[in-house]
Picture 1 (cartoon, chains in turn red, orange, brown, cyan):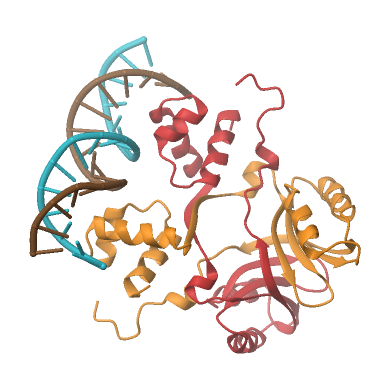
Picture 2 (cartoon, helix red, strand yellow):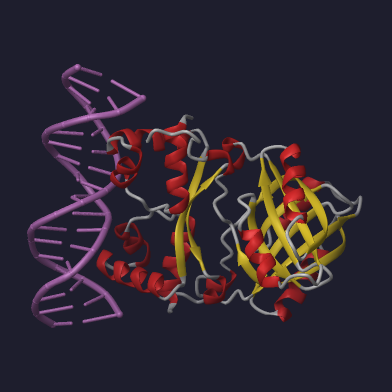
Length: 157
Length: 157
DNA sequence: ACTGAAAAGGTGGACGC
DNA sequence: GCGTCCACCTTTTCAGT
């Protein structure tokens, strides 16, 4: 993992459909070299996949909420996490420090559907109280964080 | 936006590098038809982009936290959101209902860096108390939610 | 590890239905 | 709005360095 790999990663986070030729141009390598490097990054698990981002409103998922989940001692965290993964509406699931065991992000079509979803959450064994924070607007989301892979400070390009 | 578009969207969320030929095969259309449909989905803002997903640990961002931000009345929400957007470590930013104005997700290299990041957050005008929840493990994240774009129930394929 | 060339296949238009 | 055709470009492999 050198400086060139980091540049390739940053470029692919910006545009996951960039061609190897494009990437090669921006890092100063041939397309085949880039192809080889990207293959290694994928194989070693650094790049985990490529995904289209979709506007949630356009696909009828206009309601987002963050739900803190207080545990009961009737199930293990692993079982709870698995059950949470079984719900389609649960987009992300974090095990957290504090008095909640998990925080999940759910996306549903309406507040009616949110209510039903919370019902399903609370019916999971090991789930006690839930604490729901409704998202009013998403200012930005999933932004590439390039803190760890900046351009070198004193680069000579 | 018909059933075919929804299938294309689902496929591109799974694999953002799928070729038009691949997509055409899986929806039963020619590559050019798919090309045309995808172009319209991109132009109309349904598909907002394509991005490589990267394992945060592999790029030195092993610490994730959710930070609730209590507002003061010394700045507008818009100004606060803009300032939050100016911090590289802030990956997502949600305006929320409740006594917090925003919840943000930050990603940093170490807990030391988290402390410095929280300091930067609190120095933003309009930001009062912060309430930080450290993520212990990410069980899953950004999963495609196909609740709104399921296969039709009585499809004849 | 990178290059360059060559085969295979995908892209992105125009055109007709 | 979809399919066919086709020139062009990209991907992918491989021998050479």
